[in-house]
Length: 253
Image 1 (cartoon, rainbow, N blue to C red):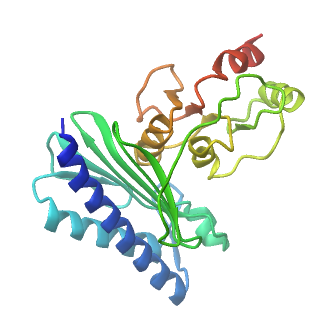
Image 2: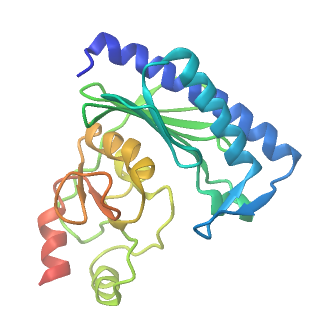
């Protein structure tokens, strides 16, 4: 496992890579978003591919012995230290002209995520966390603000976001909480305290890796859809850690 000093260097690198990714994404975006369809039927754009190249090249230069797993270019190398990349999270939003998309950069050491960074270049926002070091946000290059999850333990007035298509869950949540449609910033909302829980968020390892660390370092809880703590299962649940009992009773009672 990396020492705190190692994590400081790794976080600095992750933030530098994220800044390069944002600059590249905005430059490509300005030329126009051009879309292709991948073998799995999902879109990929010139923005995704350009950011992927920048991240891979940056990591190969700075950490040549580390493994890299990217959504767009697959696995590069092997070893106990591995960078997990989603060059553009929210490609559907990007293609549709929405502003909520960005880059995920995470570092996993011996199976534990120790660094995570998420960006929203169109909003000039950045979120990051290190294992044991807390979670933070900054906007427009301003000062970092430490993040803390909410302390709400009751459902009345709670902000719960549902990502699965369970009609019974939707009915129960609508009747007991403040309903709002889910969007891709919900998990960031849990880390910031504006959202109390996210139920059934879908995603691959590159989606969950930085989000899991952000929420937990802000004092919240992550669990996969099987009740464990794996980021490669698919759907996952995020919460402030104190509303879980009331939410579980609502959804299973």
